[in-house]
Image 1 (cartoon, rainbow, N blue to C red):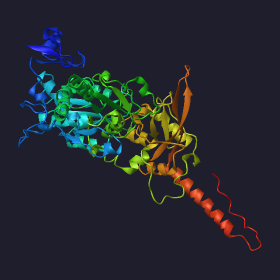
Image 2: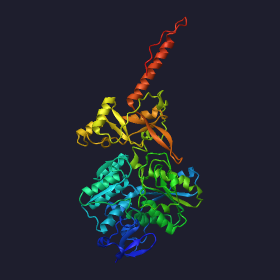
Image 3: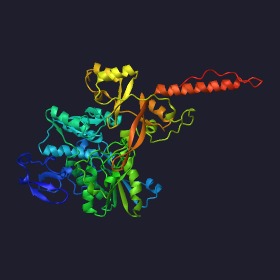
Image 4: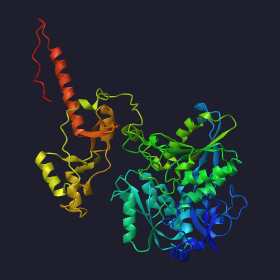
Amino acid sequence: MLVIRKEFDGNCRKFDALPQREREKGYSFWGWSLCWVTTQKISPVSDSHLCCPGKACPGIPEETKILPNILKKIGCTPMVRVNKIGKSYGLKCELLAKCEYFNAGGSVKDRISLRMVEDAERAGIIKPGDTLIEATSGNTGIGLALVAAVKGYRCIIVLPEKMSMEKVDVLKALGVEIVRTPCTRFDAPESNIRVAWKLKDEIPNSHILDQYRNPSNPLAHYDTTAEEILEQCEGKVHMVVIGSGTGGTVTGVARKLKEKCPECKIIGVDPDGSIVALPSELNRTNTTTIEVEGIGHDFIPTVLDRSVSSCAMRRGLCGSSGSAMSVAMRAARDLKEGQRCVVILPDSVRNYMSKFLNDKWMIKNGFLNDVQEHKPWWWNIKVQKLNLSAPLILLPEVSCQKAIEILQEKGYDQAPVVAESGLILGMVTLSNILSSVLAGNAQFSDPVMKVIYDQFSKISLDDSLGRLSCILENDHFAIVVHEQMQFSGNGSSFMKQMVFGVVTAMDLLTFVSRSEKKQKCSLAAQDSVSPAGSVAPPEPETSN
């Protein structure tokens, strides 16, 4: 007989309590139930959900010589003592890292990818040959791609444009079809979530396992990740630090540990710009973008139980593993000698070689000060010294045809597209409009939103020309923004970014060349002083 097992309070309800359509499938679909409900035979946790199937202990495996396939290398990741970092920050506790990048696909998301697919297979929802579609920041996509390749599914991954090229290259190598979307609100028509559901409606025999709502997500961590932590730490764990992400890891691990180690403190890590943290006051920020990948959302995932975290701490850092370790340095200060803090490292730097290990990217995005030894004279001059023209701004509803006419009439090559609320949506250029129309990707009657660059660099008036130079090494332009504090009717204040101008390499080059010409003229004037003390007239000064 089948039952619904509510994993986290031990209660069971009869299968007959399900709606007729669910009884016929023998599966509780996550859209009907809350996120903690699964359907299976009355038994302990299924062997296939343990990290070591067939073993009495769900923790440390007896490694076989030959594994039947690569999916058997998901789970049972090592727990490693971190010897130097904690001491350098003055921690008294033992600091441990749960290295999830040892999973076959390189991240903690391999666990949920395998679990979601196998649960759906057992329920008869999917079968080999079907199409799996998923909106993801990359790691779940890689995990699903790996499972799909082994099990024989077509896989389509819908990925925001800010994600690293390393993730894109790995996905392509695994045979995935990739659809890139703008980095926009989750409920916008062009968001990766909305585009994924649109594809599902258009493609026969396609399925979205939906990591944000699928109960198999937290259950994978309840049944395996948490059990491994308990086994590896021999039941002695006082704090676990986990990135928020979709919420599956923090929820599943926290639920199990609260049962076995009620005094264990769970720390959820969430970046500035996200709304996931509790208490809600932590979500107040002036940050308008999230550079970190994998954590941080503008919505609350269904699988996330925010009540299980003892507290949520926030840092505006790059890299979800780096964010977790950084927060651990603060959260574990109160732990004593003999206590343990476990930090879950969801993936490795493999995914971010072109970003967080790249000095130019770090300087461009304001995370690293330039250490160039021989800087040119203009390097530390502020952007506000440039003689920038007032920007031409387009609203998103302007048509491509009208945008071309406006840009040509005003003598501009590009213009920012800004919503009436003041939100900077992207940049539109003459060349991109024309190439998109000629390629058949857009019509002259389409709004410019269809052809904008939504990946662009922003720089403030107080930033240096040196930082601007680093940006312009890779980008054709940067949007100069100025932040203003605005007050609402109830007295609350917030920072709003205003477009001050658009700067190109030509603007920087013009500033440098004109300034050097003035300097040469000044030196020439000094050298032309006559013995009688008279000064030869300088050359006419070039106007700015």
